[in-house]
Figure 1 (cartoon, rainbow, N blue to C red):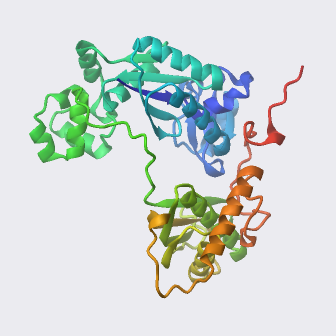
Figure 2 (figure 1 turned 180 degrees about the horizontal axis):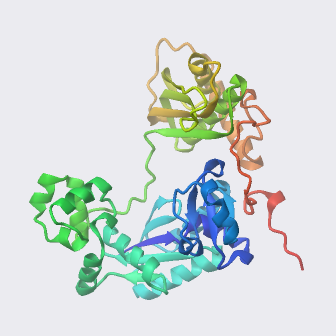
Figure 3 (figure 1 turned 60 degrees about the vertical axis):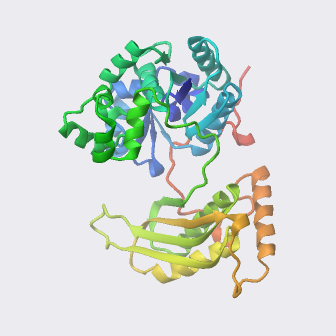
Length: 417
């Protein structure tokens, strides 16, 4: 059997772990630059706060209902996610980490209700994060079981292991709520009178394949209890990596944008080295705020093809700065910038170039590895390239950022006795 373990209101729950005074209080977490609502506690949901709402429009509601707001603290959330996944890994046969707050696991052969209850209790006790557990024969059914566990079960555990219960759950699940069925597919299904997951299981498979795709057919088979999607325990190599940010304060200063672009390039390199890959294609972009009609609008982008794939900081930073020089224009107020790397290959399979103009590549590689090692032990960007700057005038606006309780010794929780 397969279980889907999903953290409840994950970002909000992470903020609560070290703030017990916020238990049963409404909480919202805001996006980059404190722009929009991206996470809500159940109490905030009951007050009508919706996902994606601009924070400035709800400021009065926040104050009137004493809703506690937080800036996104991805360092904290990432570390808490690792702790949860470590527990799941040690209590399952196989695990597929699907996102920062959910994972598919293969259950042990024992009483499933006890297994799910004990797993939920252990995660809560060891990390403080509440989770819901849905168990079924396939991944798609486990998704449905998890949805029911989270919304309608006080125990937080629901098991689909009986034909009658499965049929009732499928009739209860709208077509657009099925994992893998997008908005467009759901709209087309409804045009054919297919409104629920149960309706989909009653359709001939040949018709589904002809009208839709093999992917949708597999989803339909999974709903019938036919296992088509295995647990993918091996980490997938990313085909593209993007690092971009909106500036806390829009800027027209070239040096400020160069610092940001250089930092984004280094972040991409770090991610490439982490998965032991290299890139031969870069794309950089800068643009103004399209929602500000008072300023002139401009979108600049540049594609850069490298002679040889690499993941070295120095080489890639040099290239993105050259690209920035070509697309930067004076007289514009820029809101956002970013770096995208593509054509990713394994670093041990990089094609050599007879006419390679860059010497001492091995030296660059060693320097990048030393930087990674020092920053890993001392903290991000303790050692950095000079063009990354130090004052970070372009950094995101995070006026309500919580402490990094688990990753910074100077922000560790203080207990008064």
